[in-house]
Image (tube, rainbow, N blue to C red; front, side, top):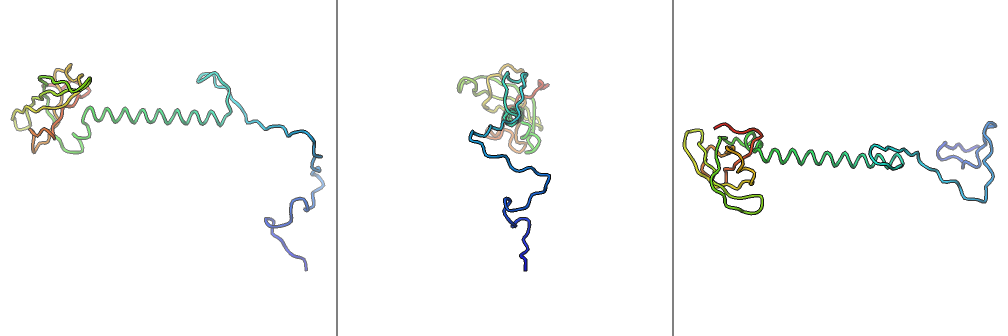
Length: 166
């Protein structure tokens, strides 16, 4: 009774019969085997070097990741500077305001008094921390809590992309 074997667990490749069209393996040589090189590509617009294709793909993936991180950082700083998240998602009120006075808190930031009029027509003077570049603006955007417009912890000055109209 002959034992049946599956192709996966069958006989070793050396003991299998070869078809007539397959040539026998070459005789072993005494020298080292030639090194297999991967295809190379020279992309001189990015850098004047010749690298293997997988290396170029790795470089391009890292550049893409860096560009994505830079774009996310730019979007975050823009949304923070304009207080867009606070205005649209947290239901904060907005009004044009002016800055008066300046007390330095470092090289780029300081404390100033934000003067604005809330939605009910009541005027408020609230101390806020702003960037030094806000002093160059004639008007800034006061972002406040409509329930407590004079609260120092819930009021801030934002720098919109366009000049706010008083």
